[in-house]
Length: 585
Image 1: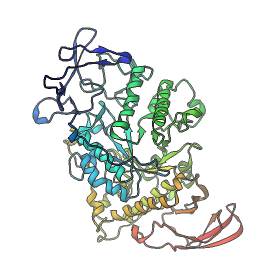
Image 2: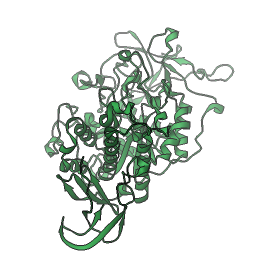
Image 3: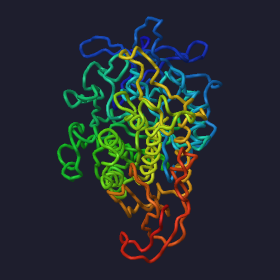
Image 4: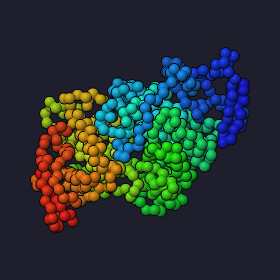
């Protein structure tokens, strides 16, 4: 019921309520009016709920003593207060270079960052670094801030912690003004268990929106799992995708938790080997698979410029092939094995024990003609309990020896060198797109930890220390400049949208990797103690070579030990099966 007027039941689980205008002709419910949905369940009890389609919800301030549950408000500002987008959507990039970001932690101050701050202060940084897309996390409203946005409570509401819907629209418009393609991190794999301010038990039963019983519960995430067999659920989720595209002008989507959706086991405890029996048996959740195919079909039919990315670790075949080919329709999948490999090496292996062949295999092990987003680390590796690559490499030395005025440190020199090499080889060899998490481009230290009871609600680790990279006396600038040069070089040569690389050399003893891609020859020396003079590298192209990027350049904190002129020789037999080779000094 609503103000004494009953709802009218429509098809597919929809209910409609018409309220007459006020005597003066104004709307019966004004902008920012608090509203509730009251549902009478089968037992006759009245249930206090938020609408699943709520577009603006807020948590009362602590001093109001109104509890912690979010409240729903009507968002219908007068025309003079509505933000109207001024800039056209960018075309989908041929080479996708993604900057993964979280608006709330983008502030340097110990507080929740705002959409306004991100638009004015962070987007210019991203553009300068040479990225052409942002992947925005934690936009869909979530009651628990420390969930990183992955326990969604209101699917149609933009997170009010960071500002208003109009401010989010402006942020996206500013991104478009700067030529950035904007991806939404969308969570349709599961939902928060919250009842008072979430979808759970909306009608008083366990089976509204979700499966009842064990199939409707995720044992690791402590969350509810959607019932993709129900038309009402499909319409809810598909309209949710359309809402973010049409209302806020998001350009594409990164689908979270796809592996959990694809299998009845939720992927828990499974190590996928690539055997087809793992992908085409009874363990596959065909209802969820059909929903993903339907969502991709709808999005690409609605807007051919849409990009969709799947967070899948299983390697499901045809996940990234078009629906009309019998695929599931994603444009890219995340190369989740690559960051795991780098962290494994840094945690468990000494430098001289790195298996060069295994590194190359990890970076090149992807399905033919299914595009992959390569990354050395994302938000996952930065969360509390783990550390960024920079912190694994340099740890406490970062507190004392990152100044250009401090005494030289072998730990810092090694860390900076490997940080650059790890990122470049991942960028160039690992896929058809590249992703970096906010702050890691300059080696942000420590980890991420959101305010919670366990840390006395501290924001100390839930922010980005931009002052580190802005200080000319600190060595973070070297990593930042290399990241920028790496992206600019890719923009120039376009290796991400070129054919996969040809690996011409991988030498375990020398710790050397060489490969060709997009008309470039990449050579990496991962040996911890040995340099080489006149090292011969095979190549398929005759001509004169010159180094266009060296991680040992002084601009990037190196020592200029690379001779940028490379001697070229032709028609020598017996070298790695190649007709041409050049010498690197």
